Image (cartoon, rainbow, N blue to C red):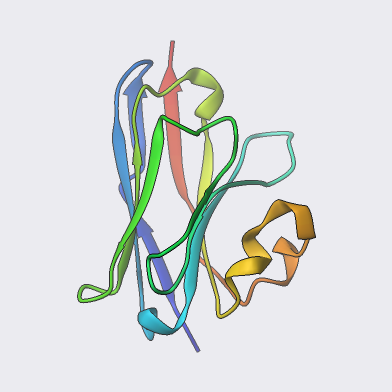
Length: 126
């Protein structure tokens, strides 16, 4: 069983930055990703990174503002969030799966991802 533990959420003003972290056991065997869910909205894909760090995916809404990275030695994936906007306010969830392609929204298989964290709240004030 893989346990995902997110951290780094909080309250920030618009235009500010936050870095989310997600630590996981058995980390190097999994592609990792981030999703978010705002109140009253469906969960949406944010970013993903392959096991080997050779591939990344981003939602159009965060491209050029957010960066996903991983440190296999520390069993941790990061989401650096810059130029935050009020519409980025959401609970952010870390997810893991052996199959990187499942994170691709074009396949619509996010609900089948193997493991999910408990989430961390990000609030961006205007």
